[in-house]
Length: 380
Image (cartoon, rainbow, N blue to C red; front, side, top):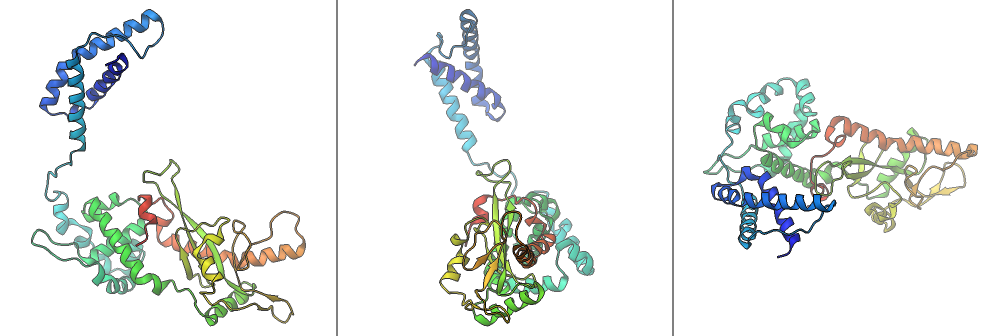
């Protein structure tokens, strides 16, 4: 075994010394046996470096082969101990065992229901709206009691999820409030979110599929924003992610792309989209070009003889397509283009207001999501 391996094993043993607090008695005894050899190796290496005036990675030692065997065996034991699954000390965390007495659902929830204003401030939803949502999701998120333990009630699951959305903090911050484990909170939130998507996505986010519905949206934009033949405003909301193996210091972002009407109701939502120069890569573009949404054909603008198609309106980050219109770029524009940009911006700002209303109610969209990236992108 060459001198370089001796130096590497020395560094390995010093690293083991740093983590000696996790060793058992046999490993500690073995470590004490090889510590003198480590000191000898370091001392000889220091003398060699001083004599030559430079640091050398390779130097001679008189250590026996038994030292290497002990060091490698000790490293193997450390690796096995660190990879060994941690055994639970408690069947139920003593702090969580008092959930039925001190937990928010059993202690303060009933009092909040008597005050609709406080309830809305706490869960960002009125009592009547919560009861309606609970009646829709109850059967899908309800669990079953077992011989081993009682399940978390469906009503508490929904409350916990709404509290997570409204606070915009980590799941660990909900532990002292609901007296549940972080892993349990994570499972509950993902279960409720999946149920909400499966049950309410198609009911609440309705994309028009016939010409009459599109014409109603276009008439509203022409009346309120003075922009005719508009199918809706399109834009994106950047949601930051601050956890995950791929997360950088600044954190990756997920773009929530959507379209809306003049009443700030979302008519289309896409998660993996980007409000950059790639409208052609979006699923919305594919549906429009394949006429899956039954968009009305081009028609005349008012009493003029000019025929124009129906389009979505976006900002400068989008590119012009037959179904998407952006403002003119550059400076020193002519009066006609300035007027056009002003009208288009009046229609496009609807999507900004819709996102502002959404984030003012659910603070988690305005904060950094403490989630793994693959969980945010996951589609089930």
